[in-house]
Amino acid sequence: MAEKKTFEMEYSKVDTERMRLNVGPQHPSTHGVLRLEVELDGEIVTEVVPHMGYLHRCFEKHCEAMTYPQCIPYIDRLDYISSMNNEWPYVMGVEKLMGIEVPERVEYIRVIMAELNRIANHQIAVATFGLDAGAFTPFLYYFRDREEILAILEKASGGRLLYNYFWVGGLAADVHPTFKQECLDVIKHIRATNAEVTNLLIYNKIFIDRTANVGILPADVAINFGCSGPVLRGSGFPLDLRRAEPYSIYDRFDFNVVVGKGEVGTLGDCWDRNIVRMGEMEESCKIIEQAIAQMPDTGDVQEKLPKKIRIPKSEILSRAESPKGDLGFYIVGNGTDKPERLRCRATSFINLSVLPEISKGYMIADLILILGSIDIVLGEVDR
Amino acid sequence: MQTEKIFDTLTKKFGNDVTPILEAAPSEPFILVKADKIYDVCLFLRDNSELDFDYMMCLTGVHQKPDLGVVYHLYSIKHKHKIVLKTFVSIDAPNVPTVERIWRSADWHEREAWDMYGINFEGHHNLIRILCPYDWEGFPLRKDYVTPEEYHGMRVPY
Image (tube, one colour):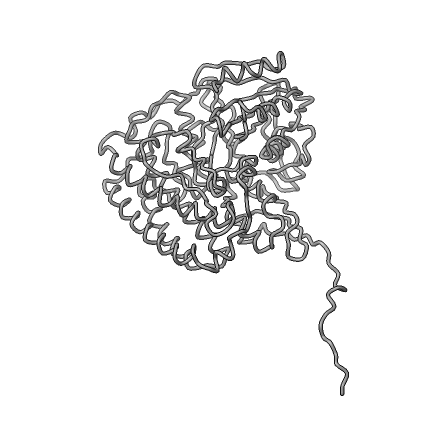
């Protein structure tokens, strides 16, 4: 009888060593030009060092040479998939410093536009998160629906992504006469697709196995890191500026603050952050319906536009709830028509800083999911 | 808690190291802190149960000629009150103690302030550039910054 040979490798003799791996900057799963320097022990992530700045253009320096209205297009380009929400805190801050009260109709149009843009942002967030987990179909559904929202925003402002629509004291243009009906139509489609995606993706066994209990972020860590938006609410902490410090006319609407509950895994995992975004789309639909019902039909959206915008020596930190979280602009005036200092408290930048903390000890494939669940836009991270 | 009450608590505890400055609306009142006391004041603000500032909204570097400054916007989630701290240091020795051990969000904020203004946060574990390239020279947001003509042999068009 022939001698029995073993072909099995002797694992005790395999050398293991820590490996440094670069993910990005040109990698589709980093959602832009972000470089992650990852230290790996086999497949396990032991350290993550984000390197950013590939899109840095120092918009804060640019703005110091621009007049206040000229800054708005620069601010559009921060978080370029929810530009309406970016403009709002800036415009609101300048209005507060100048003591302008904007007309009722303008406030309603701003709420509707911002909520439509919030839905468009969350659609991208959920769609690309599904894509990271390997689900391609919801991505196509959501991009089809998002185009309808962008059509409404384009009809009002002229731009598909970069609007320059919120002006200090008013709006760039009035909405189209068929605006209300178009919004109601698009909400129907959004709800239908959301119901479909909930069945197809969210409660899919494979998706749950992939995202539950991954990237767990406890609420106290999230607060200490300054996280906000769905990242903080996914950890079960109900902090929403629209409810905590109602700005504009948000105190008139009835909506819930969606929080993660740890339904399928541990509280604060990737699945929870994702379900918060799904829930917020529905809440935004509710706000839009109420706003359309209450909105006055007539009124000049440009009647309060100031002739000259000069801000006296004063300063403010103006904040609003953008889809990514709490977006703030620290505006310092010096008596001229240009800001002395304009600082952006960029939500994605601060939410990204928690990534090294929550991705240690998971697989390299999970790191991509955790990054996707934080929902960053590199235009805002790098500014 | 009212802003005035917070200021009272701070002046009782820290005496001459803090100076409350009440500005007219819409500007927010702020409290001026001596640079070397920032860490102690921040730790007191976070750990005192009546103040409980657990959330750092924003940390901003500023250049108010001739001095550099740091502005801290703090928020208490539990009590829903805010406070603004400011500190100024001379441009020749811009040293401010780090607060990254109090709020970890300060880590990247302080790196950005170093990157843009060259404010040296003493005790920071990794104070390197964050947005500019690692070999960039100068501090872009200072008012006396001169834009370089070229970078690594590439001409800067504007």
